[in-house]
Image 1 (tube, rainbow, N blue to C red):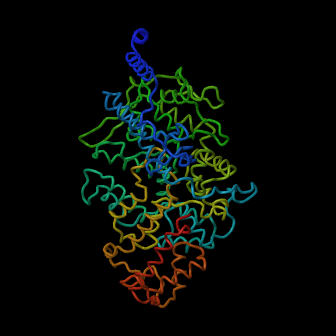
Image 2: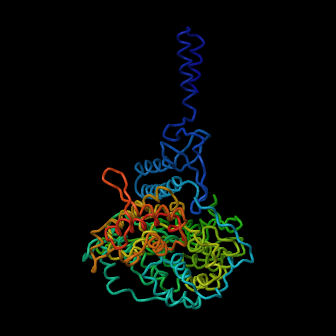
Image 3: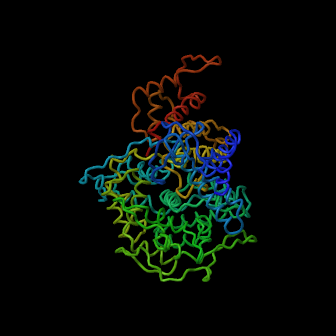
Length: 635
């Protein structure tokens, strides 16, 4: 202000030149006090390129086209957009300037925000969901009934069960059809869910592949873990349990990137084995929740090792309720918990205090993360959760918190009912079915195996209303494709792992704690990558010669003399495609009966099913074409 007064005084006595200079100085002073919009903060955008996407994992996301890419962020005005990447960059800069605990905290926040940004950007790239929501059936319909299916089992029921609750249907699963068709639904589902011994040598091979190299036992690699799991999924005799383990990972998500040094990557494998073990048992969610809350990998991944008395870190407390047990809102849109308030109250703040005390010790000698407890780091109670509600409870520590949520909060059952129905049945399950299945889960004390037994035997599960309502994720698509083609022992594991990267699903490196967005499985770009994957499988003659006896196209095509229509019908049946429209039939027959010449022209050459060359080029070509159709990619 003194300087401003000096300029004004100087201005009143100065000649015109000095008066102009003083006005310039005043302008500079005035502008220096305005908040300046920096170019790095917002970018100009076309208003027509800004849109919102409603996503089940992230809620409403605002997207815009920036430099020919769709990215998530916030609209500052009609023509200005603030990408989420700006916030990531700011946190990273702050982290570089900070020291010690503050620097580590900022780095972790930046890392988590970056993962969320990547996941949201994937959603933005896909745009709104391709598939229209499943309409709500009438309340009296069998489509919302958990009553047991009361008709004889049909062959299509066996395929449908494997598609929805496993890794697809192929020759490996046909034994169940011969056992169950014509019988009761109890025989089908009980046999399907029963634990069977794996084929000789499978688990030994899986454990070897985890190391990334056969015979090495001292370290794990991310690609070795993924390849081992793919080998397990393509060969398992227990698709129900292995598929449920993958579902649990999608809820209680962790990522291999959470552990910085490669020597600790085995911790992801240990974490996933915990989920597998629970999937083979009753899958008691309460006990699983207690164990995972103290799991060293989860303590690192969601920062609860940094949560100490007097300096809370609320990351795990929030995700425990938002993603692992409750969801943000009930079925009527009411909040399921309260955020932290300025006075330190609120459900998240209370939960964070109950979760204090645990930390992680890095054992560099044995390459382990080990959970440790320190009473000095724990905020003593008693603590009151959900204060003022009919379901409030009092507890001292993390175990009291997890058990209390499952035992007292009325929305846990509906949260898991909706998650399971969206995973196994349809993306938009009717409310009546959610509530009915939720009661079933609660009545079974949050043990998923008996609850899933009810669902998989129900009239609702087999109702045609839900057929082809879910897109297969990339792992489901890839595993089923390998099995349908009979290539379980004749595919290139390294090439398959790379293709899963291109198909946007590396199981031990999820984009964020929100897992993979369902919208990612409906894009045109993904359809192209899946077509490339199938083409590579079919053309990889080196991999097809690995087993004894060698794999041949005749193994998945009709035997002997067969016309083009018979071949197409055989392939469609193998892929579970109910009917092929006549125009598609004609186009496929035209494809099978002509050959492309070196100069790009075509000549007529009738398909001969006894000709091995034509079988490989044209018969397998029909497989490739139909496997890229929506009928095959939906379940």
